[in-house]
Length: 206
Image (cartoon, rainbow, N blue to C red; front, side, top):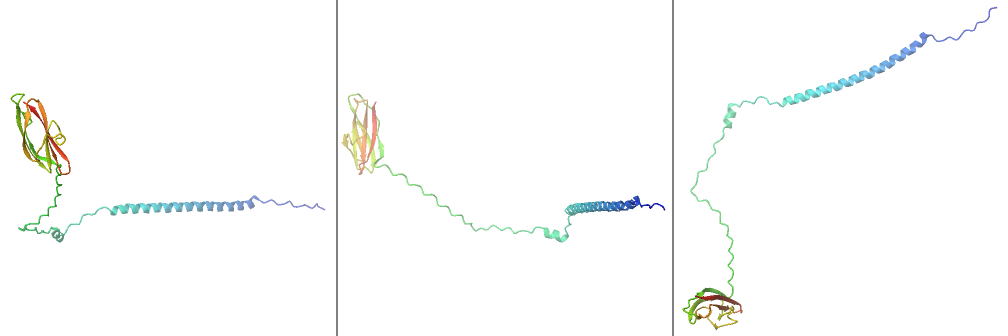
């Protein structure tokens, strides 16, 4: 009787494993090819868009170029001539002159000091033949707003140191004493308000 043989476990042959790897490889390659094709498609679309944009920009600039100017027709030339304008003839009628603007009114002159000398005349030198005689000196004056007047010798205020009272308008003669080398004489005016005005002259002997 032959001994019983136990069959050994079968190992997968190389030919059985190959189909699995072969089936996996085509799937990966298909995925890579799909991505590559997608990228190429996107790049192509972008390139086409750029080309279209460039064409539009170049075409738009070309439209701005000025074409040949239109030749005016005969009717247009005739209508372009300027029309004659009528020049108004000068008339003999006088034109109205603008009214003169009113001039500024002049300010009235300041009121004279009260009282005041309207005129005053007389010499300021005495011609003496010697130093012991006297010579006559004549003064004339007129006044404004004066009610009183005085004549004084050796003073600047004849009212305070009067020689005598005199008219407010007068021709007055007095004697200059030749013994003096010079002397002051004053006429003082007074108005109704008591204000005073003085006229002092120093006479020098010659």
